[in-house]
Length: 278
Ligand code: ADP
Ligand code: MG
Image (cartoon, rainbow, N blue to C red; front, side):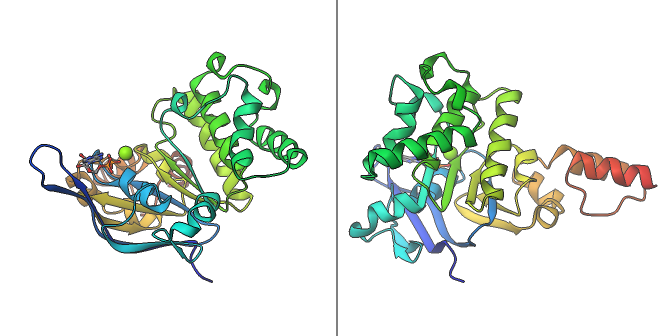
């Protein structure tokens, strides 16, 4: 089957204001995202993750190469709404994404823009709010909600457009641990329902929950594979100034002290299970 997102040798240059030169934020990246998959993108600040995501959503257009969403090139202006409807985007700051003074109006905003019928909008809004466990807050003002709740409303707003894919750019970066967990639970649930997830995160524990992890470094795709494969490259990851998940680090230290732990431990539960079997 055709991948839902196909990134072919993508280059993206920003024009720099100061000297009129260019900054190459994405440097010859190729990546296929399979339908129904859950891909996490990690990389330190400035490695090009947001620029890559905005190219998928046609918020930015390639300087070189091409991006296809459902087979449509993002450079094809006639397909802009088709692309945005297929691949919805959630950003880091929930306050910049909520536009209405009532939660349910906010969730209705996306489908309204797509020209969905009012009765159908009502159904979708209720369904999306239930999916993110925010239905009971539907009449509330967004500014009264916690960060995690606001971010769940933002996700509901995207889900109400019935996208096949949701791209989330560090959606938990501004949240407390509880808010992060709530948002990750929703992301996993949407994935279980069949939505393709592309999650940009700087939390390694979140990346470890994906089917596939992609590491960006200075605009390039440095590593890609299952979490087990990628996080086994511990030294390379440290050289890119990134951490590995806590369980990977701890398992590594235990092995160095002689514990006969297998490779491929990426989460705390896996580590506990392996330790109990020693
Ligand atoms: P990340 O999301 O991984 O932190 P970004 O995609 O935001 O990385 O940025 C990649 C590179 O592009 C960085 O060097 C950054 O400074 C540069 N950059 C990002 N946005 C702009 C912009 N609007 N104008 C000029 N340079 C930018
Ligand atoms: Mg970013």
